[in-house]
Amino acid sequence: MDKDAQFKTSKEVTSIGLFNNLGLKKDLLKGVYAYGFEKPLTIQQRVIPPITLGRSVIIQANPGADETGALCISILQRIDMGLRETQALVLSPTRELAMQTQMAILMFGQYMDIQCYTHTDTIQKNISGQHVVLGTPVHVYNMLSQRILKTDNIKLIVLDMANQLFKLDFINQVNDTFKHLSPTIQVVLLSEIITHDMLEITQKFITNPVHILVKHKLTLEGTKQFVAHVDKDSCKFDILCNIYSAITNFQSVIFCNTRAKVDLLACQIKHRGYAVLTMHTEMNQEEQHGLMQKFRNGDSKVLITTDTGARGIDGYQVPLVINYDICITPEDYIHRVGRSEQSGHKGVAVNFVDFKEIKLLKNIEQFYGIQIEDLPDSINKLIF
Image (cartoon, rainbow, N blue to C red; front, side, top):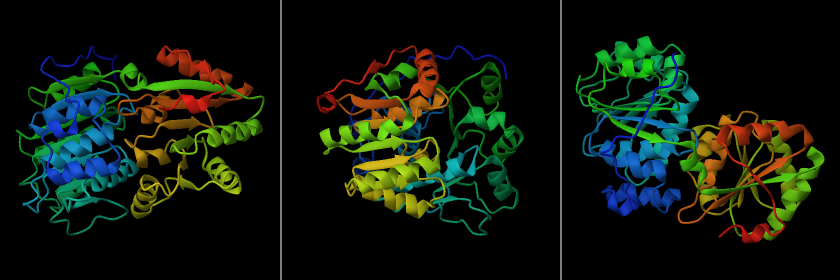
């Protein structure tokens, strides 16, 4: 790939700050509020209007901007619920991402009787009646070539994480997929980066697209960020308990870098008398959905997960995010912390850092051009 292109938001793009003003279907709006949103986040305000109007859109957004929520709400708004045929197609670079997007669609569309299919290990021979079909380019192309997937009523195709799709050499399958679709189909492309090569490729199947750019600072500006320095990793738990003793009424998500650390920390927290949930990639769709329902219902104020496990909670906003382990790569920081942006309020992100992790913290600060303040003693006054 070549260097990044100079990508700017189209002048025609506007922001709509209330879900009630987006013209969403009644049952979809009910699902959005049930999901936990109060008002649209930055990317939702800009992305949902042109997609729901049928425009093709190219979106450059950093992970953590809630690109998943914006896409899923837009897809559901475009579906004609009176037509039990496939109307939207979502191409993802991995099966796991396709399954996570499917779960989000089902959550937002829980009052719509939405039918949504993605592959597991084998291709179902009959997927008729599925409003939305998701999968990797290879899997989707196999369904098309075997004539399992009918394209007569497909009016929207989404290329999710397009930079990964193209990097993983799926481009041939993507091109072959478009040969089965209408030349006037609505295309939504989402990518973390936009290069000249990508724009050249997309010209083959996207006509007059709307461009939308969501920068890093747009998704970090809604978060107050702090660092809690500790002498060693074992000291982190005491600080965590001090925080929870001060803010018992607020939900939070805790990030660890390994599944083993998630399980260990969950045991420690339960031993202190707190209800806690854990999410990981080994869970199937029903398990993840049930866990998120418990979290939204307030059965537990604490959810512990890893970066990969957290894809199942994209877009769900909490007032407090704790990085029990600091991110190994700076790119993951926005995906964790972006979740703490609150409607009308600033969320809080606390980073636990021992002396071995100081370099990782500095890398994050340099990457985003920020300086993270030390955690004050009065943490309870920082939230709302």
